[in-house]
Length: 229
Image (cartoon, rainbow, N blue to C red; front, side):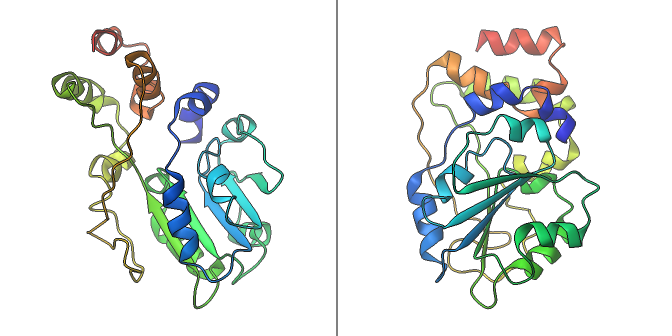
């Protein structure tokens, strides 16, 4: 996965949408302490830069060194490259030890993870009993472009990694073995509107940062369909 997003990290940082500030305020309200948050799979730091408004420190990790190099800097965000070879104990030490994290977030990234390992590890580093883990994704629902979007989705489908299955299903089938705190649960994620104003060009450029498009970048049919939307 890291290799896929290494190819367009600069564009990813520029084009991926920001999440609503209200979302992070809600998450912060769920943890009694606000010392450390961990952004797992931070990519270029979109979520880290928002959640840091509520915590003393955010540790933002990613397997892609190139993505982190393009992340916007913040004095309270510590970006760490965590290659696949990073051991569990090494990662625990990076995060401050067992029972050390108030909030774990993963923004449009958890579907890439080894889920059993990640969930077991999350239970290890979350503070007991009040640590919170939240994962989420988003999808493109564009008014007046339903037909074009369907055509593009069909075009990129052959280039989609199997791990994106959970994303395509909007995390409705994502395993999530944690007790609900009233904001979604396994099989029943909450759905929220995230309205973004963008020109058609900006939307297309954002869509191009997706992994299927990156894999199919040299395919003339796909490029033509995107340009015709």
